[in-house]
Image (tube, rainbow, N blue to C red; front, side, top):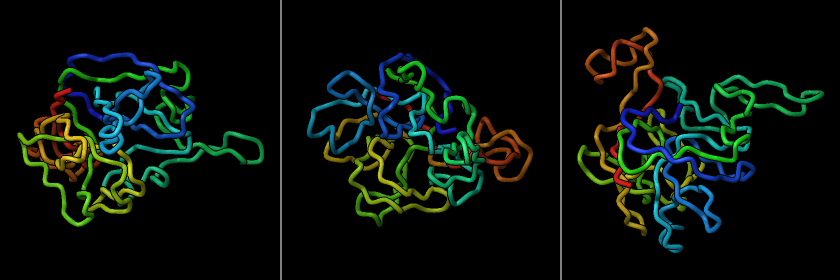
Length: 230
């Protein structure tokens, strides 16, 4: 789970290349490439091409060997290539392995069959784990103060930075950030700083008063609450 929809204004069904090897997890900011297909809204590339962020991804496109599911209190929750999930043998002699998720038949690619992606836009409220932890200087930590603007991050930021259970192994443009990149398009507003989102499974990771959705339960992982402005 990488996105939790609280309030949706509009959801478009847009074309995407399901065979592209660039991963797009749910909750990532997206734009359109020159062919009109959905692609990550990289803050650096968009500044060059003039492309604008059009919304937030509601489905996941994956190369098939990636898990985007946050693991509760795991240091690997933002480490999609080695998340603590099950692995199934899909081919003869164990040559092909796929990581499990809700859509096992799609082998982690929810757009594989349709060639379409749900893109939320024109406002709405969402919890997402697709946000930067460290600024582009790789030292300062993003603060995400409520009511402040958010931007699409740039893929030029260094991988391997992070804090707590938000360690990133790759740089991926299109995450939410409180730091304006070269492309200063405002894409959202912070509603709640990153916090452990309750799963509803009894436990003590999240306190009863942590969130309106909360209760004493295990956590889905760290999520940022945003209001879209695109």
